[in-house]
Length: 374
Image (cartoon, rainbow, N blue to C red; front, side, top):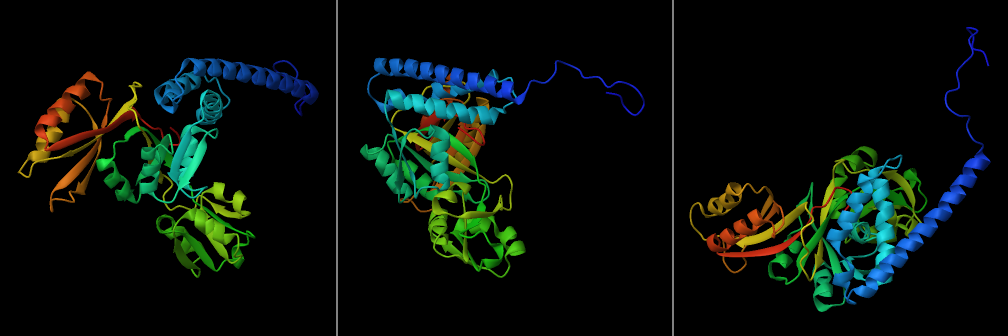
């Protein structure tokens, strides 16, 4: 073939294969993937036979983090790291279920962000238990009705979930992981007709997080706060003039059509969830430790405690205070710090904290979460 200037155009590299040849190659690769995934599942089942029949022995968050890190380190592309991570979370989840089924409690109902966070962390091959309240989520795990639980603890725009903090004070449960879930609000309705919308319903926090979008695009619509976004989506299924703000995952189960996605005012809106268990987990090499303590009522007491970590060169990533219910105007402090309680420097600092504080409690050391995943 000649160009307009009379020169032959180059065709670098080997000629493209036909679609039929490429599809045949994909069919072969699919068979190989099935064979290798099945082989992996058999190995996981063999490992399960060597473990005690205990969910805590089956679910190993540190080992799973190491597996995911190794997979992503060997990723040559073209799939992105997050795409590959999601694929392997489901493979790990399915193989784990062959060893022993596990039950995970979360703040319900289904198709909420808490449900999404639980699925993001554990994969789909677990028994999910929707609970009516955060206290019930703690209770399900404490009573043995669930093996693990997932609870919201803070949002990047709305602040801490104080009920979760209060329940952490007295619980015997420990934090074994965290999920940093980007919150992407979706507007949906039964017919998907923007012009038909007269009312928009959602949880009060979601309405607040979409305030600017709603004022600009639906200034005349009535806003109604509901107990959850999932409840709003369920109601929207019965009322064509009502739109719901919810996770996109709530659309299909309720027969709703998406009107607009990512309507939150802040693009970096993220909610942090804690994964709770009954037994501590070991170090992964990239960990976070959450500690609760109270200080004596004297000048400089808090500074004295925090300086223990500064001298040990331990980074404090968060500090939060809660009033002591039994002592007016006195406070408990929650801190997140970099490192694991078994790290020598952290261990020494925690021993010093025990001596300096009125009261202290390590709530858990766990692999540090990544935004968008576990």
